[in-house]
Amino acid sequence: MKAVIIAAGRGERMEYLTSHTPKPLITLKKHSLIEYVISSCKKAGINDFLIVTGYKGELIQRKLGDGKELGVNIKYVANSQWQNGNATSLIAAREELEADKNFILSMSDHIYNEALIFKALNDYNGKPMVCVDRNPVHVKDLEDATKVMVRLNGSVKDIGKEIVEWNHIDTGVFILPSNVFKVLDETVSEISELMMMFIEAKQLVACDVTEIPWLDIDTLQDLEYARTVVPL
Image (cartoon, rainbow, N blue to C red):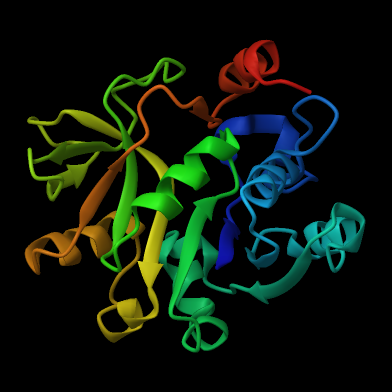
């Protein structure tokens, strides 16, 4: 299965760090954020990557190249509409993905253990799936997190940052079938909007990855915290 990594945004909450560097290339410890994502996917058996770039994307491509030094295969798609929401990156990748039966979708600033990918691949049943955590140890700002309401049968009832009733947090990792492009068009700007479309069609399911380490790096404070808990 191929992994698609959205690496298009600037990450304005990282302040001065992204003035000249795209957020995915910010160094966590010995490696950049996006290299941690690639490494975890690789450890879970994923070798083929499609990286969607936007803000200063040429620097990402120059840094990672074709992936040979990381032991993987990397292709790139440029998203000229990256300022209009993260779903535009998925739209930009349409042609590269329509031939795939399904694919992993990951944000470039969500750092996670490879066990999360193993669990997602093991649980995947062909329906659109979002990985969720009912007790996110490393999420410090729940107000800003994307919440998910999961039913007892594992189907998703609701998703969004502003929902009142929720029992899980979105980890930023999904597995999607290629027929996602039958419903995804230019009117959709955010991934959460796409997930709502799947919910309305009674298709979105959850993969519970509670107790598997992961975190989301949005701010300078998040970065400093990540440096204290993420292994080398």
